[in-house]
Structure formats: structure tokens, C-alpha cells
Length: 430
Image (tube, rainbow, N blue to C red):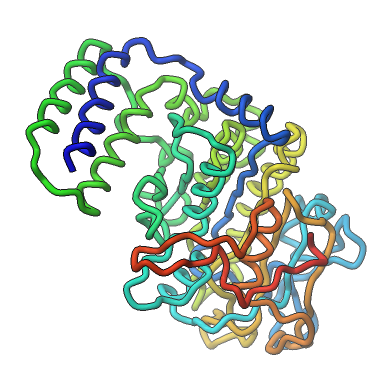
């Protein structure tokens, strides 16, 4: 315990002494050095999270002509044989960069449990604090590429409340840093994406505050715990974000106005642009939420509106990453916690449906232009290549060059693999 207190106190004092002389580009030399030593750019993941459970039968796997199909029509894409919703025209032109899994089959139809399973790859098990996918990826690349903690959080969630927070048994340093989320449906503009309280105090004020904190810390006899560790991790994140260069990554006004317009002016589109800025600077995992998919009523009008936001933001993200040479090192995952019933209910809506649904993958490690799996004509049954969450997790880890079988020690002293060992990667996508 004394050593831990000493290290905390020393670190705070060192930061206090050096706060006015921080380098404005501390993250960049680290990233360049890692790339030179490993021979490759560290991989990143962007999760486009369709919060609420999207009606994927109206996005990726339409059933025109069937009573379950609804009013939407299919359109051809750049990939031969792949057809998607008429409300995704920009993505249709980039289909050679992404692939669709049309045979996702899961068990959880409750939002909370489904989000947990989708984000962790495991069902809840007693006292085990399973970390989210973002925490796992951030931890693995932090260790594997020997990158010291830089000024920007390694796991960032944009637009809403994370489905799984806290970092699980990996610790609070791998919990998601949350940006925005006050606007339920994405909002009319990007004002919701501001990071609060980033305007720095003067160097003298910063140094004085840090020295005061170091003094208080030296007097503390509070034993180490999850609470104190979480508080310390949050404080250290805030201190690192005092670096003007780190704070600037969240400033979208630095981007060209035409590019910002291309992404869409809502918080989802601007969140996708922020995701590109983050992975460009070496952030391991970014989640961007598009909220509002819980369409028990008025499904088609709401899905049309949401599809237009998804199409514009996601297509611009793919194009931007490709043009900057980042797509080969960035894996994009687009999904929600489950799908929606093929049957249309009495309120022109669709209800929860985990049995057969679709999602999209693009970028690092993924062969584009592919369609995996097939559902029946009415969308109710999977006819080929059923895919579980464990299979998807194994595919994601393989796509970014990680061994799904690698183990981390959990909070209960039990080793846990990155992906459930029952999961099998989808080889045709890799």
C-alpha cells in the first residue's frame, strides 16, 4: 500500500512540475515509434451501434413481395448479388468494402441482457465482471504494441450511454470515455458532442491544483478499492486531456466544412467524423451510437429516417478512411443488440427478434462484397450458416490480428478467453 501511495503522489507531483511544458504532440511520436517497431499500424475498431435493436429486415435483408416485407424496396449494390434497402444508396455504392452477415441468431430478447451478451460475448456468470469488446481491444493493443498511456483515452464512446461500462475485470483504465449523449435521437446538430470543461486553466493554476492534489493524496490512508481506483483513473484521464493537442482531437471545427457537411450535421454523422479523427490518432476502439431503433410502432417512417442518417454517416466514414489509407487498419462493425420481428404488428411496428437478424462488417481483415448466410422467404428462419455472438467475436478478433483464445485473468481468479472458446471465426470473411 505505501508503494502505491508513493507512486500516485510522485506521478501527480511530476505532472504538476511539468504541466506547463507538455509536448503538443506527445501521442504522435509514440504512434510512429510503435508502427516502426512492429512493422504495422496498430489496429482500431469502430463500432456503429444501432441502439434499440434495428429492423435489419428493412436494412440488409429485405423480403419484397412477402407480407412481412413492408413497403421498402431493394436496390442493387456495387457487389454482384448483394441487395440492400433503397434508403442506403450511398452505402450501396461502396459494397465492395463491406460484407453482410444475414444469419445472426442469438437468444436474448431483452434489451439489457442482449446488450451485455453482444458487447462482451458472454452471458452473465455470477461475480465475473466481463469487460466490453472495446475494453478488451484497448487492453490488447495497449499491451501488444507496447504503447504507453497517451493523452487520448484508448476507448471512446460517442452519443449515448455505453451498454457495458467500467472496464470489467480489466480495470477502470479501460472503461469507455463518454462523449455526448444528451440528445436521445441524435439531435439536429453536433453541439451535443462537445467534451465538457476542456478549456484549460493557466499553467500556474494547473500546477497549483495538481500540487494540492498530490498533498491530499499523501495524507490519505484510504485502502485501494474499485472506487478509489476508478476515481484515480478518471482524474488521470482528465489530467492527460489538459494537453491541448489531446483536447483538439474532439474539436470538429478543425475539419473542412465540406467534409463535415458530407458526414451529415446531426450528432451521429459528426460522431462518425470524430471516430475517424480518433482512430487517425491511434485510439483503439470507438463506439458511435445511433439511437432510436426500438420501433414497436411506426417502424417504417422511423427506420427510413434513421437509415438516411446511417447511410450518410457510415458511407462518408468508409470513404474518408479509404482515402486516408486507414481502412486497412480499421475494422468497422455495424449492429444492434438484436433484430425485429419479420411479422408487422398492429401499430405498423416490429417487436424484438433475436432469432434471425443481420449486421455489417468492413475494413481491417475483412473481405468486402460478401454475403454470409440466408434467411427464409418470410425472414423467420435461418436457412444457411447460422452465426452466434461467439462466432462474430472470434471473427472480429481475428480480423484485427488478435488470437480469440488468448486469456486474461478475471476478478475471480479464473482465466477468461477474449472470445468464448465455442466460437468459430467466419473464415470466408477473413
